Length: 236
Ligand code: CA
Image (cartoon, rainbow, N blue to C red; front, top):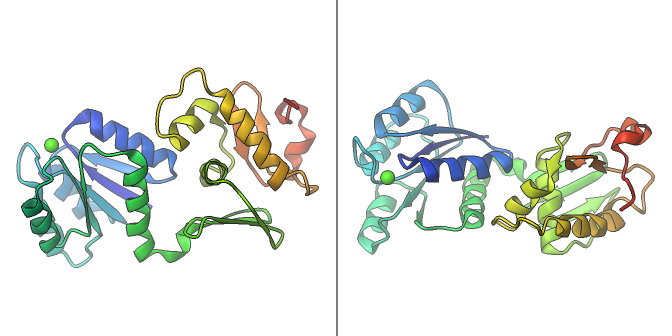
């Protein structure tokens, strides 16, 4: 899932890039309109996130150029220009959605998912071993049995499953799931992981949620993990 972020403000570009990357997307950033058009010419993207006030041209003219291409990805406008006129103009020119700055990352992520889902319905199902997540309906299921998860539990599990096989730190999990910096409160992750394990792993012989000592947590279906004491749950 490749996303092109067209944004000249480095701070925002970094923030969006970091967030979407940890949500499992592949992100490229173009700092101006011409760079965006070059990238669109060279590669296919599943989504374009487009700022309107770019140093070299108006984002709307980038949008027009995207729309005349044969393969035209969905476009989400992300702009400080929040007036009705701007929004209408953007949507008339073929933008698929419009989000006004400042914005909460969770909202951007929800819209990104919705737009990508339109084109790729199957991407929203994640699985790991016999555990499956339906990210659209927010339902979890293991070995054919539904698992009842609280919203934050679901979000943590989804984040871990999108990054299967990769260890994620408590800080990364907090920043991703709570959408804020939560220094000193990373213990909350341990509490949630405990809840998750009691629902997702405890009733089953194969454990999917692993503690990675010194780092954090990881979801991985490989059963050999259980034989490696270093990575086993240390029972906190
Ligand atoms: Ca700008």
